[in-house]
Image (cartoon, rainbow over all chains, first blue to last red; front, side, top):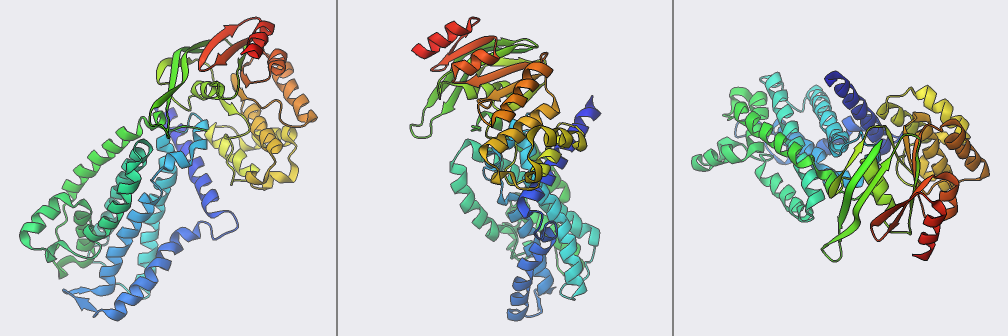
Length: 259
Length: 217
């Protein structure tokens, strides 16, 4: 009975992933390859500019590697959360098939982004390392674990935004502001060690993306600079957020008008 | 069997900021093999009731229980995806409903007669072609109960004849709920009619009486 349900779930998600790829990239376009090319298209100009205007090392860390470690997590967050707003409403025709739940629609869009972005992190890492733009990480698995947590974090935020936006229109406006503030507070451009100690204590408790950034950078830089990763704490917070997201998703159907 | 009991549905009105009641205390039982019409004017709540029965939306109050497999609302809209090709849609449905792609394809090719259009995106189809694809897919998947939203009037004569054959000669054991605002179609296809007006509903076993009442509304 349970394995039957799992099989159905897998079939539904496969179908939605395939559909998502077809509707998004079409058959004749770059297709699947774009998923991998896109971060590089974004990353190259940014890396180029930064490496020209900055010294090769700042605060004891190599600048291009630091920028890559700031930019990729931000891309993951922006991509995974990017279509979360009204995702169910925008794909409401799929609810015609009762096996497809609002959560499935969300997974079909944002989950595909999450998987694709994890793959593209690995790909862009390979390309940039090969080109000599970034250093070999101190601890490769730790770095990728950091990226995994960043993806999980983005998935949680996306799920909560997706569910709440169907309920309150205010979410749309708040989300615009939040996604800008996120750029500043996420750790995209700074590390915990640069903060004054009292502020750092607070930030490492409430600024979840910063703590995840510390994992990514801890894996990358090792002893070059002091980092404050705290994966047990982040695991608990993200697990709670996942449960909150699932709970909010549970009755989205009540709020969606299928026309 | 499908049993709807005391079903109410409210929608939030975007302009006036309050709730408006679309269905009010509607009850309905559909047994295997039964063909029930939902007869009402535009906006009477027919499509809403169909969507609730399909499980797409949830009732505000009341319960709907289904002990047989129910199709999606087969109509001019929904069901199939516009930017996907006909083939992609067939593949999508095969995955969702756990059928073999080849079986669905063979049936759809024969029934819908879309030819080379199956390789084109569905958004380029005419309304009649989309209806044919939608109908063909729902027949190919084989449900116990079909929910049909004003569609039999769509399509050309050949399509209507094929649909009629499919519904009345081959699948006499299947149930059907047909939403329509045309009494003649209801009389032709159904054995009972639920007349809907301003969200309230009344069941009639006598279709002529139902048609008269509906015409006087």
